[in-house]
Each structure stands twice: as structure tokens, then as C-alpha cells.
Amino acid sequence: MLTVKQKILRIKSLFLASLFLAILVCLASIGMAFWAVQASPAIAQSAAVSASNPIGIALEGLPYPHPVQFLNLTIEGQPVRMGYMDIRAGDRANGRTVLLLHGRNFSGNYWQATIQALATAGYRVIVPDQVGFGKSSKPDVDYSLDMLGMNTAQLLDSLNIQTVDIVGHSMGGMLAVRLARLYPNRIQRVVLEAPVGLEDYRLKVPPQTIERLQQDESLSDPGAIERFLRNFVKTWVPERDRPFVQTRVRLSESAEYSRWTRVMARTWQMIYREPIRYELSALTQPTLLIVGLEDRIALGRAYISPDVAATMGNFPELSRGAAKVISRSTLVELSGIGHIPHHEAPEQFNQELLRFLSK
Image (cartoon, rainbow, N blue to C red):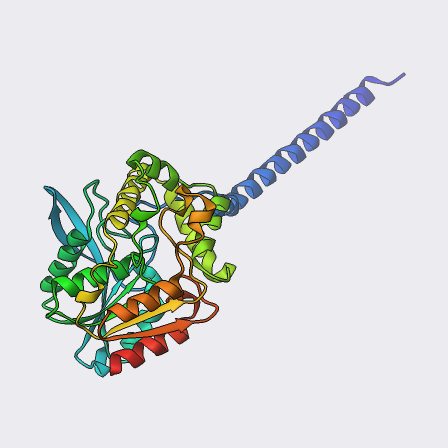
């Protein structure tokens, strides 16, 4: 039997043990909370990396290689902004300006290597994002080469630039031809890099509704976007080409993506309606045609049978025919290259470009 004194001591011991255990539990809880709080920034950062991270349809949130400025315009009563980069040559300036025109599935930021080569050689370089593309506004209007040409001329006027040499890629090549025809005294030399429109797509591709075109432009799956973009290069180089996929995926997550796809559908119709093959003979400027021998891009191939599609987009054949029509032309063919020579083979492209401009 325990005495009263012994019972009291035992109760005190049990109480102290319980108190000590409670303190340990409390300290453990505090420690867990501390580490949870400390870990939360890393968790948040990981989530940010893995999250979609969308960008706006004017590429808000996407950095460009040089500062972007804006020209205010009015199109069909709508106020719009045309983004552009203006890169000065610095101390080595030769007094000449080169205008770079992007293709339909791209924007001005993919000219970075060409900009660097030209600026180093002493040229001032103007790189617009046409209205409907890149960092420029995306109005739902009737797009035409004349409209894009007039916007570009207004840009040059705003910068007090009277004459330029012009380099146009893909759809930009179509626009370069139109500018050279509309403003022959302002365009001194013309470079057509893989220009689309050397064949009349209407002869083989049936017209498509704006709704069908917009639906087909509405890609959002990364795999589908990559499969589409692989058509533009002969050899897919992930570290070089995947940023195009990432940009398009992030763009597809914008709340305004449907407006972007609508504009893309309208510019498809512009290219379809306005082949430049019938205007080539009007060019009077020295003209360089530079194409990849593996280029087989053709508008509307998805809407026709494989047999008919196989007869389209033969850029070596089309460019040789174009060179015969342009009175002062030079043709350069790059082996092993697809639809974007300045991106796939920048050193070779820039060498040919600078050689031509220096003549």
C-alpha cells in the first residue's frame, strides 16, 4: 500500500511527464509549421514553372531582343498600334537602312541573328510586327497586302526614312514584292527569302470559310503545335526550335486566343487571294531570291488530296521560275535547308545577304 505522501509524489511525476510530452508535441508542431512556411516559396516557384504561364495575344510577357516602340494607326475606323524595333548601327553606320518583314506564322523577334549581322555591318535595321501579328494590335478587319504595305510606308514616314533595302520572309516576301511595286523609288534592293505566293493556290485549293480556317488555327496541344511547326524546318533542333512551340502554347492559353485565331484565318485568306507570281515581272530593283532546297511549304495543302498536294510547294522549281521573270534577279539555293533559312542556317544566310547588299 502506498502512503498518502507517496501517492502525491506519483501524481506529481505523472503530471510533469504529461507536461513534458505536451511541450515536445507543441515544439514539434511549431517546427513543422516553420519548415512548411520556409518551403512555401520553393513550392510556389515549382508551381510557377510547371504552370501554363499564358501570354497575351499581343505577346505581352514575351521579351524581344530589342526595345519595342509603337506607331498609332487607324484601320477601318479602329485605333490600332503597330509594334516595331529600330536598331541603330552606332559608330559604324553606313547611312543605309534595311527593313525586315516577318512571315505569317512568326513575328519580328525571330530576326535576332540577322539584326545582329546587319547592325554590325553598319546598317540601321527596322523590324515591324505587321498589324495582326506579334506585339501589334489584332483587329478583326479585312487584311490585304495593300493595307500592310501602307502601314509599313507610314512607319517609314514617321521615322523620316526615305529609302530602304527590304528583306521579306515567306508572307513577308509577298509584302516585299507589293512594297517594291507600290513604292519603287523608296525600295532600293529586294531580298525574297522563301516567299510564298509564287504559285496561285486558288487553282488547286478550294476556298475555305472563315469558321473552318479559324477552327484549324485553334491549336493548343503542345504535340500538335510541334508537329505543325516541324513542317517549316528540314531538321528539328529542340533547343533552337522548341521556343516557337512554347510561345504558341502560352498564346493558346490567353483569354483572347479566339481573336488571335480569327485574325490568323483572315491572313490565310489574304495570302490565298493575292498570289504575287503575277507581279514579279514588275520588279525593277536588284532582287535576291534565297530558298532552301528542302522547302515544300504550300498554303492549303490540308484541304486537298495527297496527289494534288504533292504537286505544290516545290520551292526550288518555283524560285527558278520566278528568277527568270524578275529582270535583275539573283538566285541562291541552300542545300539541306527548309522554309526558314535565316533561322536554320543563319551564318550562311547572313553571308549571302550581306554580299548582295554590298553590291
